Image 1 (cartoon, rainbow, N blue to C red):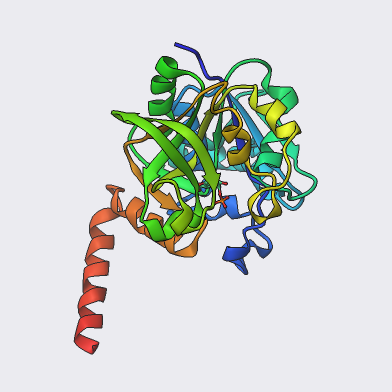
Image 2: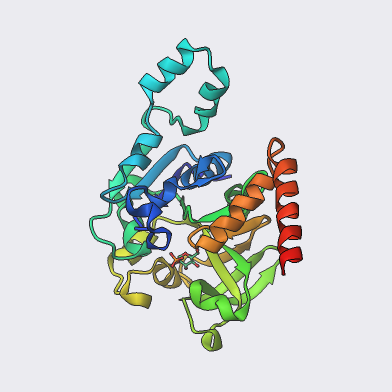
Length: 295
Ligand code: G1P
């Protein structure tokens, strides 16, 4: 099985949909329950065997960089006070020496441009891309499922899910040639099609396993949907040569790039937590009853 060791995390977005919160906090640091959004993507990558983490960041994201650094003063204080539970809570935010590289995308030219920044760090092995806005709830993670499937089919692989026709214009969409189990072979890909022009309702979710050949495509890429350099367009150019599959992952996906999706994810993760679930569900039920009575 090919060991996918490196993953790229595009984290340069401004997060305007979360203003005013994102005026001074990177979107990736907004907490879902008690962990920042970025932690969920990093945890999923670790479960898939990723050892090298490449963040494509931007100016004003210092808090994100500090988060994965050692907090020496804080750790000393917690140790001195014997607060072991609090010390343990820091464990997921620790990165082994040399495991994290932070690049900067100097201009916001799109997802394809963001991924292209990692070219010199990737080398000649397939690598993963995770968009932290897409949070996927699953015990072993969607990327681990993809790594397993990718070892059998190779090529470029994208996570996909079925969406309502009216929503396709928010996604990259697969033109499906044939489907076997969870894997769909693509004839092509379109970024953000109009619903009436969409080739299917199989939408791309932010998990990719890409061959390094993608960088030649990204280098030559012109602007696509929204005037941006689209990763989808670069992948589309490799359909005949490299092969492109969609992987219909198991797990629940939350669109944490939208406030609605973020709130739903917050509720779902709180309800999945043994220490919060009961009180939280009771609270929601009481609240709903109150609203019904008032209506
Ligand atoms: C990006 C990709 C799109 C994909 C989506 C998944 O779009 O360009 O192909 O379907 O992520 O979340 P964005 O949501 O950044 O506009």
